Length: 91
Image 1 (cartoon, rainbow, N blue to C red):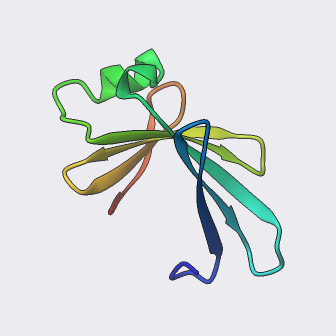
Image 2: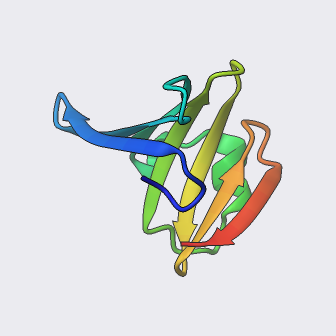
């Protein structure tokens, strides 16, 4: 259970780390899939230029949107596919 009350299930599929989040009613919220930094969209890589990215992920949300997460200096930075930073929070 996460701090906000949602549930998170972590698992591996084809040797790729993934997690799926659900609300308390059991509705799927999002799935996060670990990806290589090189697999981030070019615009996101450009936005991160000069920063050391520890981990990267692709997040597919229930509303149909996809965002990308990059962990930089213990912070999770979320971007849309155009490279616009959506949020930044301490990991």
